[in-house]
Amino acid sequence: MSDRVVVALDVGGTGMKCALVRPDGVVVRTERHPTDAARGPAAVVGTILEVAGGLADKARADGLTPIAVGIAVPGVVDEARGVAVWSANVGFRDVPLRDLTVRRLGLPAALGHDVRVGGLAEARLGAGRGTGHVLFVAIGTGIAAAHVVDGTAAVGAHGAAGEIGHILVRPAGPRCGCGRPGCLEAVASAAAIGRRYAELAGDTADAQVTAAEVAERAAAGEQLAGQVWQEAVEALADGLASGQALFDVATIVLGGGLAQAGDLLLTPLRAALHERMTFHREPQLVAAALGDEAGCLGAALLALDAVGVRDHQEKR
Ligand SMILES: [Zn+2]
Image 1 (cartoon, rainbow, N blue to C red):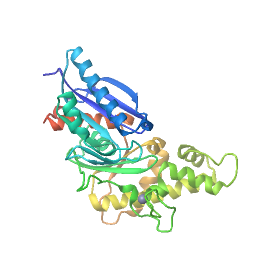
Image 2: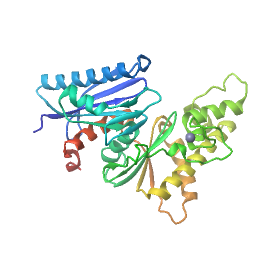
Image 3: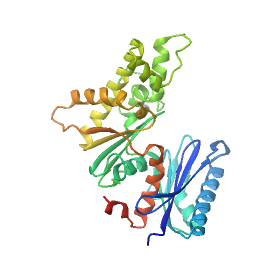
């Protein structure tokens, strides 16, 4: 039965990462396509179905048997009903994407949330592998998390579990995109770190820097960058400590763009998190291992789960 594959798509605001994945987690083909979200949600759905159908056809042409389709999308996702409820950057409003896929491709399908399936992949195939209880935290433009227990990510009653970016950490802090001041992602997302640096640096030519540059300048000894970086680390530690109080995980996996700072982030963050642990057991804090493939691999895992296939776990 080694010829079975699932079709996996990770749909983002700008691009779609797509793959054919075997039940043991091995990727046999990858493709990337532009999302071109400005065309509107109906056109994006059309592209998703076309790309998924094309991959299934290519699998058959290569002598493989597509057995299911997994699709990850951003925003609020009702995984039980297979509906993309809401998405700011792709424009979905109550799109029954799973049923549309089943109808178009004639294969079982599963729909998941991009960060939750990314967490699923990191917990089962990546940095959290073998540790059972994992909190995956993606830090990029925003901050979102997935709580994975024994290979299953909690979805929540309304498809919105894991919004750790909206934990209140600084009541008098900057206003969040959600409208409330002081959310974690308004203080410690990559975007927030860049904004804070620009705000404190004032009207100078080199004030517009990315969070990665702030990290590098802090490491090189620049005082302002050091202050901004430490502020973000302290806020992240507050957020992660709340996460640990709620979930008592073995491993916290940090993903997203900010995690690429590696030890510049992990070392001070481990120390700040350690300071905040009282009776809680301290989790391992590690960087994600799968990079930007995590969402696509997670979509594949969701598809495999939908048809009851978990070969990759037997290979541990
Ligand atoms: Zn918020």
